[in-house]
Image 1: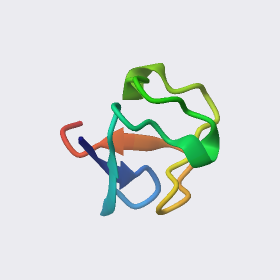
Image 2: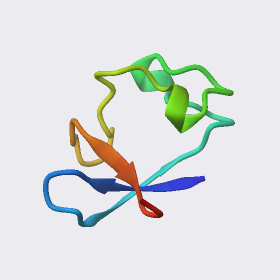
Image 3: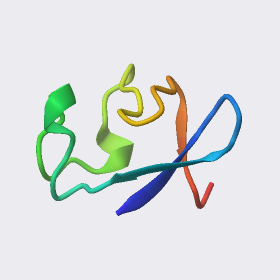
Length: 56
């Protein structure tokens, strides 16, 4: 799982992206790595349009 943080305030978001599950609510199929998520995808938790991982 990858911890997300908002681009707009750099606060850690509690959303954890799991590539094994994807993001079915936003049409991201299971097995999709975060780097493969299409442009325009937003964090389902904080709704940030630009997201980074906690490691970035």
